[in-house]
Length: 109
Image (cartoon, rainbow, N blue to C red; front, top):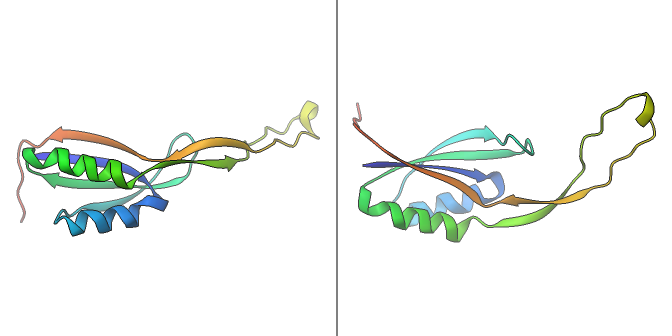
């Protein structure tokens, strides 16, 4: 048995959960926050048999796509930068980060 851990941007998670459910895969949904952009995302825990891993990862790849988004960097306010207004920059967001780990034991009580 394997555990697929997928960190998915909030914009993609509902569509992904629908696709997984349509293929008879179920997930535990955990709210999380990204470390770099500090944007909301969702971590999905999906338990599958070894032979199902490739299909689940492919469903995630097909559903979660990266896209460009304008972000305004946080400016540090100091005596030399009191009139500095940062310009928005385009950053790539979305997609998914996926880990697949072995499960040594599983029980449902």
